[in-house]
Each structure stands twice: as C-alpha cells, then as structure tokens.
Length: 412
Image (cartoon, rainbow, N blue to C red; front, side):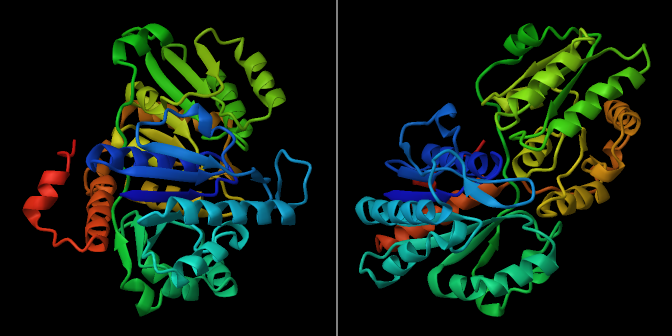
C-alpha cells in the first residue's frame, strides 16, 4: 500500500511539520505502508525519517513577506523552475503508482504545478484516490472566496478530488460555511479535529539538565516557527525582560528558526547577552519536548505551533502574522475568544504588554475559561481511519469493524 504526500513549503516550516506528523502516525498505525513525500523544504533533511517514509526534494521556491514568489537557490527563472517541479511530480506519480495522493492546501498545487498530474490520474486506469487536506483556516472568507473563484478551485475539487479533510473544528471555524462551498464539495468535506502532538525523544530530566532550569524558576519558550518574520517578536520579548519584576525568576529559551536571517539572529544573540537566564538556539526537531517542559509559550499563531500548545495544555501568548494572509490572526482571535490562548495583535505589540501577558499566563488566570470549551484533538486517528477505508475500498476488500481493529495500532 502506497501513499504520496504533496507539500509545497514556500514559507516557513508549517506545511512540512504538519504533513510529517500525519505520515509518522500513519506508519505506526498501518502495517506494510510506504509513504513518499514530495516537498521543497530546504530543511527536510534535518527531520528524522521513520522506516517506510522517504522523500523527493523539489527545487526551492520562496515567498517573501509581501507574498511574492521567486526561485530560492538556483539561478533560474521562476517559470522554468515551476515547469521542472511539475514534471518531477508527474514522473514520480507515474513510477511510484500511489494508491492515495494526499495534497496539502492548494487543489492545483503551487502555481498549478499539480494540474498535469491530476489530469493524468483522471485519465489513467490506475485508480488513485486523491484527497485534499486543508488546515482549519486559510485566510479571510472574502480573500479566499475571491482566490478560489479566480483559480477555479471549486471546479478542480469537484473534478479531481475524492474527499476533502479539514484538520480543524467546525465550532472554531466552519470552512464550508465561511468559504461558501457548494453542496457538491461540502459533501466531500470531513472535519477531523486538530492534530494532537506527542513528545518525541528527550526525557524531562535530560531537558532540565540542558536548560539548567531549577525548581524556583519558570521556563518560558519563545518560538516564531520557521523564523523568517520572527525577529520583531523575539526582539520585543527580550526588551520586555527589563519590565519583569525582580521577584520573578524566569528562564527563557528562544528558538529563532532556520529561516531567520543570520544577521538578525546575531543581533538577537548580542542583545540577549545582558540576561544570564536567556538561551538562544537556531533550530530543533524536538520542539514538542520543549513545549511540554515550558510553563508558558510565546509564539506566532502557525497551525502546528498552536496544535502543540493545545496538545500539552500550555498557557500561551500568541502574536499572529497578519501578512500576506490573515489565517494566523483569525486563528488567534478565535482561540482567544474561547479562552485557549492570549492573543496580541502585532500592531499593538510592545515590550510592556508582552511581558505583562507572559506574567498573566504564568499565573494561569485564564485557565477556568478554557475549560468551558471542548477541544477536539483527534485528527490523526480520524485521518488514519479514513486512509484505511480508502485503501481497503481500492483493494475491493469488505472492511469490517473487526478487521479495522486488527490493522490499527491502539491510539495513545
């Protein structure tokens, strides 16, 4: 049984980390499964690949803070690089012959680079099932509807996709309603809940020794995800340390992210030298371990980071990205409203209100409100069930509850 996963990864690490989490869970749950990841992330090699998972690396296309695309490393034109990527995806599909293709976010891929592959599948007698995976929020309803109509995504989903899986909750943001999905697409949509994240490798004692956090200190983790636009958040956090009362003993770990400019990282490192209780690193593939140990998180509002915060039930101060899309802002506002996190609009961010919010979260004064909202973190087992059903339907096997239990590893 074979699955091909497409992740275009033009900005940050969000798409890659989300798809890797799904891949790892599927491989643990389904025997004799092979997954081929097609992606362009420049740091994909830094992540541990479990047995059963391999990847095809596409040439990198990058997006700057204003949203413009360009070739990241090669001295080639954007048009010819996209043609190369499209050809690589199609020839990979032809030779790998996946039973299921799981496409992340864009129905036609980046700049329609999936269109030729989707047409090939539609006209080929090898019956590959095609599934679109959407995160909880894409952008504002107005911008998303305009984009989807302009790029004919509604027609594309109706023509090429068998199902649409949303890793979010209708109670938080109802994609079918907000983005005005027609009935023909809405009937393909399955809300799976958010992705629960698990601790990865290091145990708590090893982390405590590494961080040198003693029992009298509070541990604050600061992470802007990939870090391409995280400089201002971290700089503001370091400035805010001067506003903390002396009685508060706080140890801070700052993870800049591999996509932050080296000169910005160096500037932050120099600024943090005045504080003996601040440690800065560039990247870790064990972020969940640090989140699990933290007393409070300061971060942006990327899907994966928010899921990790919610999975470990951690107090958090979230400063969302608002350009080029407002996905993070909507997510932060929705989750602040139900008491899950504390959100600060980036235009209102200051050292004073950030340090005040951190102290508020360390005191956990918002906890009671969050208990009123029932959070669904069952995306991974639901996606696994859906994958199993598609695989067995394709093999023309009648699946029963007993058979499904036999092939599934117990969750948790």
